[in-house]
Length: 487
Image 1 (tube, helix red, strand yellow):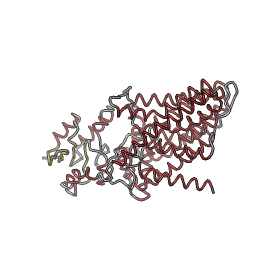
Image 2 (image 1 turned 60 degrees about the vertical axis):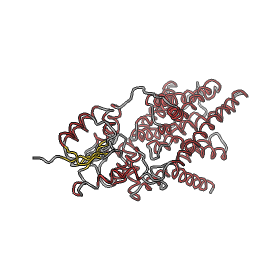
Image 3 (image 1 turned 90 degrees about the vertical axis):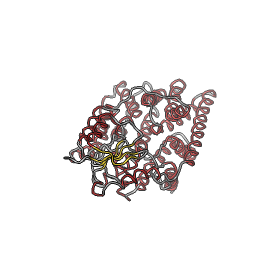
Image 4 (image 1 turned 180 degrees about the vertical axis):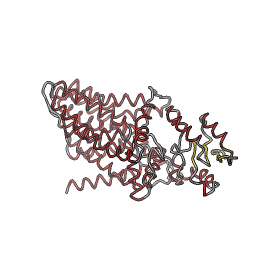
């Protein structure tokens, strides 16, 4: 009975949280301008209607995020279906977080810290419906079993690792691969530490069993997607959008902090990883019983932090490090119990400093949400007026160039090219995709093209537009081009 009440409590919290902070899917906001979520919803909606991701509509994420959105639109043909699925995922994350904290804290404190996870999540959420939200419950569960394995781990004693845990890691790794490969970076570092330990202690049979279990979990998630896209004749296109283009798009170190705002965003992004990194160092130095665990947490937090720095990542990437918040507080609890007064005071100071930082950021984020317009449909009016000038018979031969994706979603326009938005941005990241987009636009299949005047058009595309299209209408923000009639 108590467990059921707790689940209901967490479910109500999840609904309330998402209603306020998941701007792109909440019923409280009308036509919100959120780029990533609009892409995911649009591709998912079209998948639910029978179109094929990566073939009919292209995006550089893995298919899981599109599947979640497709299921949401299949449930009730609106963003509310996506919100329902978000609630289920967040409910699992909350309950897993609670179980994780219960390993070291009383029930009351574990519930309180699990609820505070929503505060941490709030400062990292940028519109909602992000790939990180859907990988979070699997990452928390995976790190829960990693943490459980480290209990009683001794430096010079052999401790086998249960293959059933490795099966979960493999499934989680596949889920991360099929959303964005780098989502698994922290988990991969931790699992590598387990493998090195098993090899170092010569537990070869156990290591082999774990490898097989990991592969089994990985294939269980991967194969259904591979089989589906193979059956649709688009397996390569799926791999290109999920992995190959992103490998081509790997950024060189590009940390850019040129204002207080960018500094604050970077600190929020890295806060959980830095928190665990410092905690892990303290554990290695002052808690001999947990030293090997400290090394594992050091590696996991360091490599994720390194990626954050090198990628100059968005704030919502920090959602991936929420398991570090849980591990950090658990380890500080153990450190406080095992150390002297000085270490105990340092542990408390770190805990309160982290909580205070998150609370301050949460207050500012709440103020931003409060100030945000609840109806942003005015952004669509120039597009709506321009599309109204296109003959009804040509509405299936439209594409927009460098326009934002929410226009397609809210006005229910199906582009005639798979590369349907932010084309210049995508072309600047990889030569192979640039060739694909140029070839598609040179085909001349689109009878009408709406161009965003705010951006400088790629020279190759500009040449195609000048040669094959004539000006039909121009406003301050948009240009409507019509295909020249063939002689």
